[in-house]
Image 1 (cartoon, helix red, strand yellow):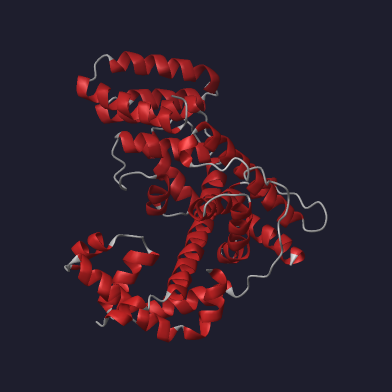
Image 2 (cartoon, rainbow over the protein chains, first blue to last red):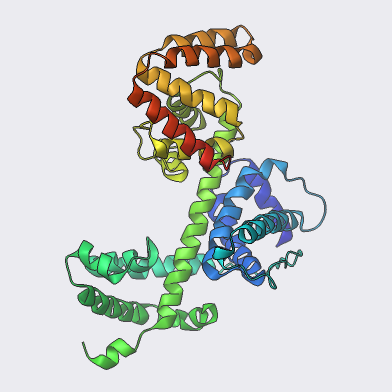
Length: 191
Length: 176
């Protein structure tokens, strides 16, 4: 995998559009795991993963291959620095709920677990949502995908009561369950 | 809908949706990264630094071959009209920081935008002439002095808007 990711870095530097998803799918879940292990809550770990992904692109010209796993090590060094920045920010703002005892896990414990299945997962979920009735599709998008709105807000947008939105959402999830049931083992591993 | 159906909340489906959302977020972050890298590279080829913020941004976007809408969304500008309000100040701070543009230059371009809105196109033109003559270092203070002189003629409303915009810029940069 390391040779592949080093080659990916070259393509990123060449502004190759096909590197966009390849990079995010290869590193996104690994970065999130890294930030979760360092003690950040799920939502913050995901936000920091996004930040790190963007930052890698912006600093890609500074990357210089220096041995095995060079790109992986470089990306996770950036992640460690971002985590340290976040650590300092949280120390300044105790209201952010910083867990002091778990915070300084910033060693280079990056992993190389293959995430090649993630692209398929996204495509399957998108296809399944796309096959729903328009109103169900919009509801799932508003609740889970494009935003994470409350049922009251969704109801207002879709012209129904909060309770009706909640019930319709459950039904839509049931339809998705039937369309995606072969992914259940994978999904339960994610939970 | 029967009660038992509602109790069968398929949590694993929600997990799948959450994962799809996360991966889409990663894709968007990666796409934004490519866009910013293009902007940084195009920024190196800009002919004159003495351009108002909106003109600079439009020129940069065209040179980089990216969509203005994407830059507007990423930085947080209100819309593609690039109205000079507080949101513009915050977004301008985020964008110029990403591009490695220092506070002084970014603020100067911001003030030039207000000068243009006021109708004082002489300042940017004079600045560009100075820059063309290779007097960039001296021009910073000269242009600032010209701007200050021009500001005296501005309406109180315009001056107040500039102040709010600059405050938003500085707050976003973490300077206040």
